[in-house]
Length: 193
Picture (tube, rainbow, N blue to C red):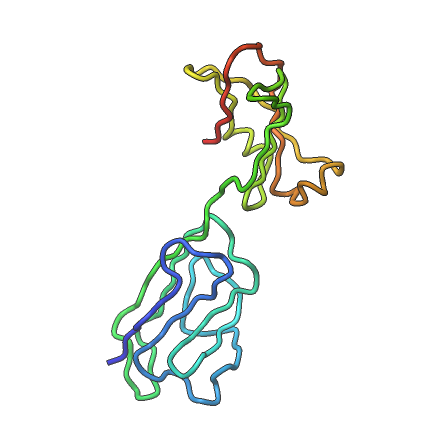
């Protein structure tokens, strides 16, 4: 009886890993091993372009053409009815899911900080693990007074060319600046939600 014996990835995954399925029986003739094909017995939702390749007669890999989009849950299906070289068929769909990493800050710096104190108009520079839109960062960020719910409106901008050497990933980097000067002597926290 034909069965899927291994799938990868499962759960949260690195976007550079190929998608792999191993079967308990030979599926591909020897002459197809190592040959790339645009079609194969794995369906992905959402759909992704790439190439399939048999690594041996029972292990199939799918290498996406481009990096998988981040913060996305994929459903992979090996459909019922596919047939091994011996003529055995998969009796039901084999379905699993995996997720690419969500948005996260990979590097940050508060400018205007001196010995634990910040200027009354500090700039927070954030670099994310993927491209971001300034309007979305503005919607999901705040500078909040410690111990209260009072917050300050923020301007969000992209780094200028003068910052390119230190912050080369401009499409993933933003600068947050309070719209108005902050009152002195009050503790504030940057927040992303």
